Image 1 (cartoon, rainbow, N blue to C red):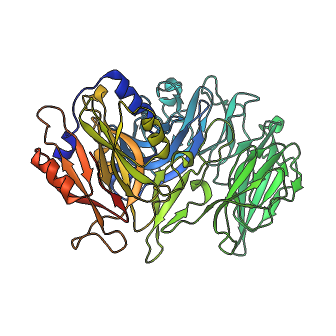
Image 2 (image 1 turned 90 degrees about the vertical axis):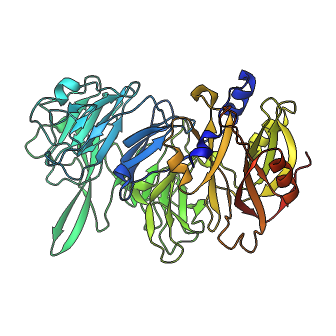
Image 3 (image 1 turned 180 degrees about the vertical axis):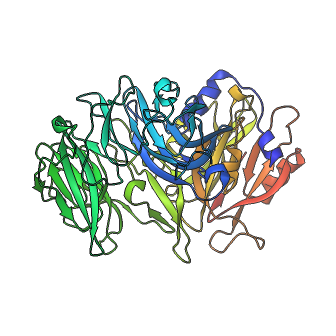
Length: 538
């Protein structure tokens, strides 16, 4: 593996470097349990004001040789923001459980964070306010109050209330408000409902704060949707401004669209809490944007998977978004959110893998922008770069079109092979990730294509830039390529690490392999299997 990683080193003229880098369309993968142990958990994907998303949960992930734990800021282009690293530590001496990030709330300035951590960027967090971190720098904006001894135990956070520039936090027995300008909790303001739920409250911008609650009687649990008028705060025990809505199904407040708040299987008018019929199924939305409510369909509904409903309609779902691809299921509940981009987010946010034998669902391991990966099964094309004397592969149609428009810089060799789209990670095909040894990190403007554990492992190396999954292929076993994909794709290496000029080439014929080996290239064996191949003509 080390030789493969070192095999991509040399500088190139600026024009070619910029062209290749600008053409990539990355997605991101490789989440693991904290410290690489156990399962990863992604609790939320929160839209950021400039586009992109904040990933919140319990995970370790590596990118460009940097480790990120439990909080990860993704730019609008899909790349992690490597300049934004918030360091969380967990202490056994501090009895906060679970030791994870509970919730986060984004404002135009920063992000409030609650969780079982004991320090954030080295500052103790057992004080009088949830930590408030700058979106620009990742540094604490309210460090003085956070480091004060004692204070409240904080749990779930509301959305940003733009009308008052505030965020509301739900503690174990009350709802409190925090100034987004100062990061301070207002000591004189609280709502004290008779019952507290465990999901995030929601400010409706019309003077109301929504939350859910539950009660158990005769072994039957009932769930409530409540709206509290913010003007009535500081009462000993606060009452909703409308009769609470009771349901036997567990509910969460999913979001706001127009004049309505969506919670559970219903929608409520945000000004007065009036119940309005919405859903025609028993499913609850996982995410609500201005135009659509997205939800995981009930098992009996066809098609099964993720669908959306127009919020201006009566709740009839569209057969639009995603039926379960083979071997994968769309994550449900808070686990599913469309990718947050400026404007309407019509992109898939997250899927989860399951085993084909027993159907057991594994933790989420993938965040991918749907618009970055095509639906069609690609034909992978080989290019030659004369200025470098390097070879390059791509299965991305838009990239192929861009490279074909630069025939003096990128020349087709004639070699192609068929593959599958990496969009759904079809089984038994395996997704192939692409990593780039960029000149700005001492690399050679060459690429390496990995499968399986190659991808998260190579992400730990600072000299390689992750460029997402490119295509999916069958892979060889001890007995060779499988039936239905019997054509072999062999990887060769030019063995020029010492000259900082390493490069790999992929060939599909014994004749081309023999010619390259005669020139000093090393045969590294069959790595891909394809249904159809075309040999290079030069």
